[in-house]
Picture 1 (cartoon, rainbow, N blue to C red):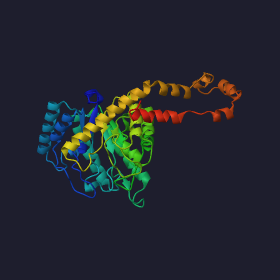
Picture 2: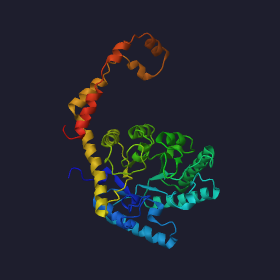
Picture 3: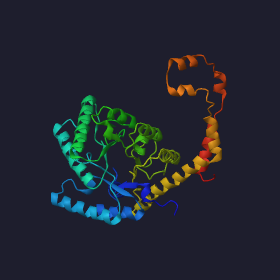
Picture 4: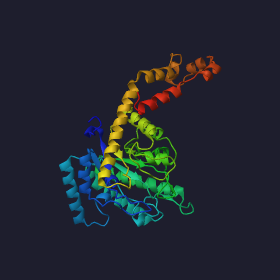
Length: 387
């Protein structure tokens, strides 16, 4: 089939995604809990390339060393039998009550130390299973009241933690990159470093900025009403797009984590087109959940749908790039007679004097129609399947 996933597509899912029992704040589970091994086989059945996990998705937080080793051994066996890989791992620093006031940004230094210890152990586990990217989502790194915490202190504690963990990974000789995942709110009222832009600014203050990038998520930028494509483009332009979380989300809602492309298809199209056009080679990771209405057959349909939609949009992007009318419009919009190529070299006294001497027809520039309405309509028609 034309839209069947292949290993080269690098489609991955987290254990917490296909393994979600459908619990929400207003209702309990609607699906039985499957083991990590069972979820590996489920993902292999639907054609995924890889599986990612939080430490406690795989090993319960209170597991004994003997239990931990048995779980990891069984998981490795399932990976070997299915051919799935583990490109990314992360730490759960948000579920346990110990982290109710944050992990790296907790006011309690004992909690901050425990968070470091837990993350070091989780990094070891991720590397043992082959992960090359390690994601940090600070689900509890924030406040409900700013009376409780000084944001400068919190920023310093978070910076200190990342510096410490970078040094730990370097000291262990791990071939690992860190990816920071922003989110504006939920579960806390306000989360620190809420957007891709704020994360990129924070990374520049670290001791090892070269090994730290971002893991932007569709839903998280949409929660803030932002354009996800623009955030991804900024991360790519900065050389910091280390990983990406795909799902779907209405603007301004709680974290919905819908199936990729299921509610905002134009935004999904522009994202896929960008990733394919620039040659992004990392995982296409789905951090999404099936509807609460579904059993595990529905979960499989959800997972297949995420991957199928990406591949359909990939084909649509290829059609966009070779559509004669669309490309003719773009060529006209971007027409360049070469008169100002001298500005491409940057500032010089000579170019500044030459620019001062030019005359521009401001009125004519303002009158020119750009045909964006036609261009957008052609894009819509392409997505609707009539082109």
